[in-house]
Image: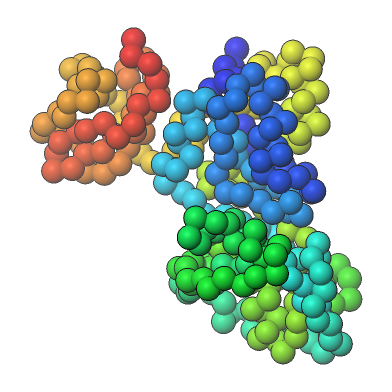
Length: 298
């Protein structure tokens, strides 16, 4: 039976909910107040929100893969104060560009670059989230942040003036800002009319379950048997696995290094000979050291 108070639950976040709303709703279902998530989604956005419970919360910031993939619906001819259709319209214009023009400018946005965080964001300046200043009508000086756009694929036009793009990007990328920048390249105001995250690090949409599904399973007492709560090691599947024997295993639990360890330097997810996931370790200069344990000493 799965331990609901210690593991990872990928959720398909519904529209209209904040990421914190989801955590608040899940505390009762999972039976713990110790919940966290990796990668906030705007209320308008849907898709992959990875929830970490109990001791697994320490895995959120240690994941080796923080990249994201989104399907974003770009609406040309409209600009809002929030960068999406939930905001106040600031500008409208006739749509003078179509698919061909859009495809032509997309390659400009690939690669490493600097992006200015939007005012309606949780980024903190002088200890205060930007969105609090934005709601008061204030604009705060912000510092551009390094991001990387790995790919942008054109997926079609669901309505006149709207285009769906699949964007693979690094952590910290604001798709709302990207949408506005693409519009500017076309000489048009632009905003997002929909946003769906399809991948967050090691977790994809096909691993997710909706809140109604999760809450119904919790109410019926079947959530623990569902297999939806994943082990903490799933956050580290991109790291090579290392099986340790004694005395290295005991050294890891005691925080002691093991010298002349017979494995290549690098970062590992570590198991004991019984197949139990122990945690993370690094080997540097042939010395094995613990990074973080995720199991209790036995």
